[in-house]
Amino acid sequence: MDTAYHGVPFLGKVSYPYGYQKPSKQVIIRVCQKAKKVNNIDGENLLAKTNSQIGSLKNYNCKKLIYDYAQMLPKEIKTEIDFNKAECKFVKI
Image (cartoon, rainbow, N blue to C red; front, side):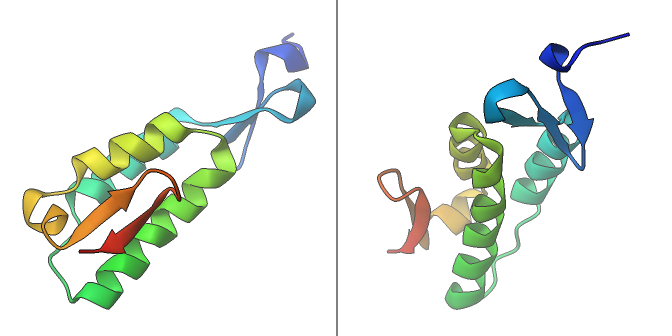
């Protein structure tokens, strides 16, 4: 029997003692798939879509996954929006 120190998986998060949480492997796979499938849509919807994905990732305490998501976006998307590391969100160029 595992203890709480090994993590308790629940709703896509693995929760550890003292409030630390990380995403499950399935969430990481889905984030990578979503980043690669972002279509070239109009600017406002594109910003809303990418910032919404990052907002949901902020709940996991995973800055590295957020930076990886920003790097996995297609090149044509990166020409329209830029990732602001200080605010941890996308802004229009």
